[in-house]
Image (cartoon, rainbow over all chains, first blue to last red; front, side, top):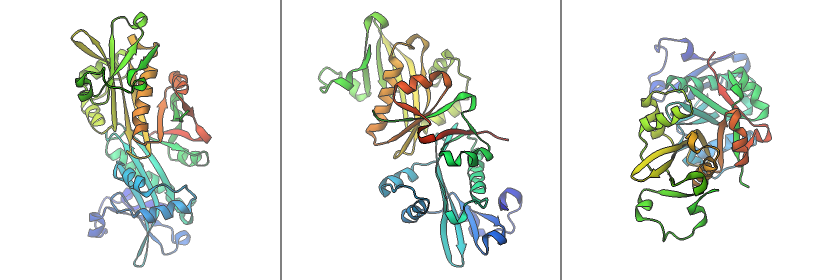
Length: 174
Length: 174
């Protein structure tokens, strides 16, 4: 079982003051599955581009020019990240971002969870965290483009394929 | 036949200086179809929200709070519009906008052409204009979500449905 502490606790008493400053949402993990790892989610944590590249490498994504990645992050409405804390070390284990018009629509891109943390419920909790953030900003139309192998994962989270026949399309140069 | 003058003319000699200031791209129209209408496209023309609402009304779209529409326009990467000039009168006859990370992705939303100008090739020329703008900014991934009745329209423009099985998905609240 994985769940987000904030989703279930109304009081912030037990949270560290620095968690508030740094906007850290701690995740409650099952020790039997995750051992002594501590994990938090954030939308304000600084992203080191090399660390992000390493994370994307771990799932086999094609490399992209860091200059363009920087620009994309700077112009994303939401940049969410998941972090493992082990002693003094904090390592990025998850990432996603969303473009948006800040009003009606948000589109989620580049969702990645480190293979070590896949198939344990963490990705699901991370996506719920992202959806909650977007919905709390009154954005009603949350969309994404899913690779075939993750369609069922997103379906279980409440994402619907082609609702009312609406189709996602990609423009390809002639 | 409808085509964009700029797409085929290298020289700006014949263009009015104010067209450059206001970023107006004049469209060459077939007089037999369009009569004495003159039409231009722009990405910088001021959008009157009531005029936009009227245009959306003309195609039967549900009304949206103007405050949210304003915010969405302010936070769109591209706001494109099409205008008919008849004597001293300039009327908005087309609209579309795109969200983007300014780097990799752009998603086109709210494409509307006034019914008087539909099925005459103007929508096609307008979409080509938008794609050209996005591509000239080095944005390679141009996407949209198409209603069933316009899937073929976008297909003819080079948009591909579910490439490599990638599916557009919408999140729906439980």
